[in-house]
Length: 196
Image 1: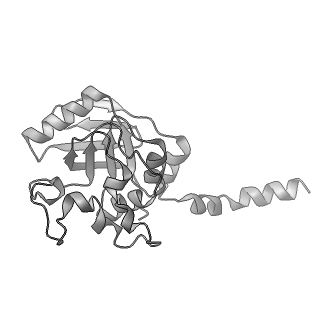
Image 2: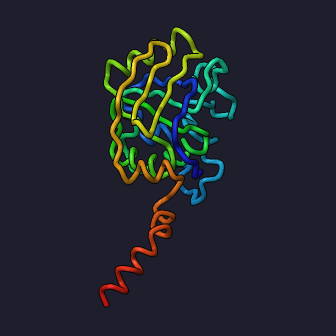
Image 3: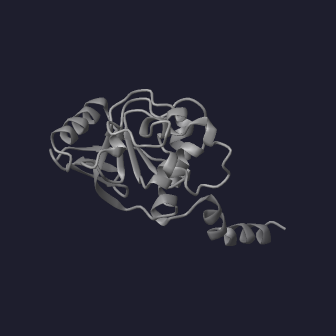
């Protein structure tokens, strides 16, 4: 879903597990889908639901004391296969931001292409976020894309995060790659006229 990014302040859903791979994010049996619709229903499907479809009460997405559009995840997030369906599932569920200390490159780019912002923070800052959220499930985190900062509102501590300038421009303006090309079509046409 195309949404402009600016500053997002939200409570968080913690997933303090390392090496979460794309098969755990969206199981392979859902990869036949060619449409993003409903993909969020199957985010972490095997962790969220029993075989009969009933929710597993001990999984964090089924815990009503946690809510928000920010997922705070453990190190090495999104490893494994390159399936874009994993990013579709995050966007479809409603997540706007995923925070971790390390993302698999392909998954990180898939998130960016689907208007989910992956934010890389240091290990100590990630641990602090997990601790703050555990102590108070209503802890808010502010993600400021223009200034590229993430702030733990419980402690007031902030960190800077990196993002490719082109991806940042796209997110802040709600543009996908095609939108960007269409927006800049006049530059191509001008170049063609000047270089006949």
